[in-house]
Length: 329
Image (cartoon, rainbow, N blue to C red; front, top):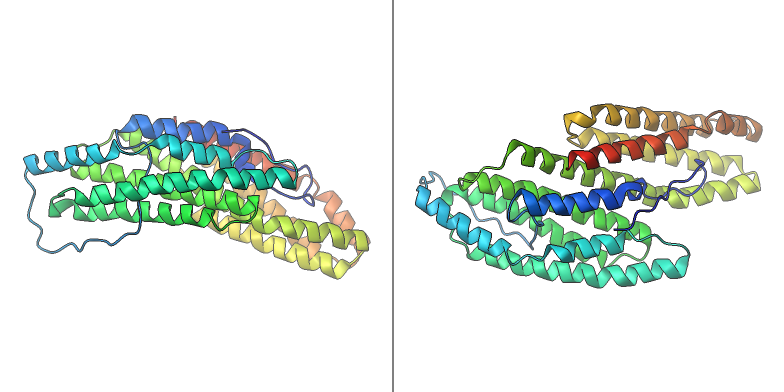
């Protein structure tokens, strides 16, 4: 996957995915870790979920039944081609310069998403043929649910019309994939093959990385058109329009802060999370001040005084993404 920084040097410039700055390193980590931590860790597959009901009481499964189900499940995992996942991820995160390049990236990524989706859909059917003991049906359902979400995210890729939309959809694929990896390891444990503490820690770091990428890219997709409006209003000296945009930008920062609170970050990145949260709060304060400016000259003074808040947030984001990437090793 190509590494490219789309981080601007000013708050007023268009913001792009900060996750892209370390996307190559982390994406490679996700795939490598998935392939090594367990035989099915290659990637989380599947389709629409019809969760099988869990009846009570549930009879305990014998060790022989669990081992047979585990062996059969691993056989289905052998049918996954994780190179299809990495090919889509690489295509979705290619650097773009100009409209034509963006159109080409979309054209390249969509068939790759379709190929991975078809692999997951077929895998789902294979998993459903495995005769799992009733005692582990709940864990099987979790795997199918996560994989169904990944299928749905890949379907959304076909509907996007710009690179911002593609990045968000690709992030959603990554979140479902990471969530499915955790569910699959939980199923392994229920089948008598628990994962190591390190593998489970890597799972959680992968999910946190994917969730953070989605939060950042979702904000960027909404922020970019607002940044253009801000620039236009500033050129026209339209204070009212600038204040309106600043207010909306503040709303996006508040949403991002809420999303951060919902992500289960691993403890080893707590310092970077705190720094990113502090930097985002500083940008929010700048947005709030701008939205309350009483004159253009006053607004420009506010903007000048807070000129470093945007770059500081970008730096904190890169540091956090790098720390999460390291945690997936």
